[in-house]
Image (cartoon, rainbow, N blue to C red; front, side, top):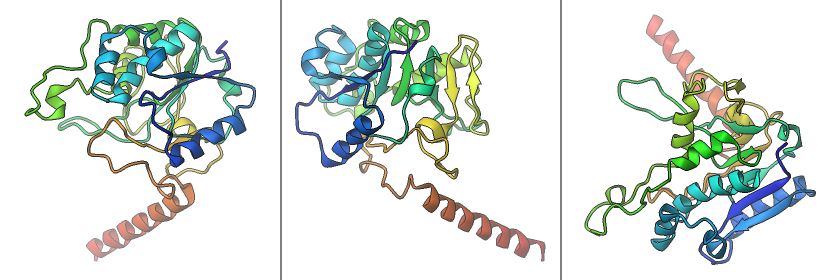
Length: 260
């Protein structure tokens, strides 16, 4: 059984922004009987990992957290939450899954290939020493975050900026995970991992709030081009549905005109 233990990280030592405080306040509201374990710069020493240490040394906190989330859940069991997670329900119904994770709402594009999605590394849970988490951890063995100290190079060449959702998704495909964007359903993989539709642990998209356990507000601290957290109206299903209906109406009008 997955223990009622929430892991999260904050390496900078700086005060939490108000936006994140609001998100984290929902954790205590919906998870009052859960324990919380903070992974900060001091606790990072427990991991003794080159990749994470190098990421912290250049203040790339999110990439250090990519390793730490796996280390924490593997060695302690429990649930990982990024600090920009807004809770709406308890995780209690998922504690018997062995491991649970969700499909991401965001779609990735590669030339010549079908659009695909990754997994919700910002929110997943597993029993202690789960074999799939161990497999993900092995990706970081002997891996360096800093590739070059030449500051004239762009960040994507100086650093290993492969994000953990991509790593977990590719490994999950070996157990039957269907990464196609056209698929949004519950999957139980051959290794027992439960993968839930995107509206459970990422964003409601054009659906209702009925199934939403939490929403990822997407601060994107890993992305130097990001403009900050996802605005709340972006993850408001009513406003998204309205926008979707407007888009579909425009499409129908265009199709009708083309048929004239």
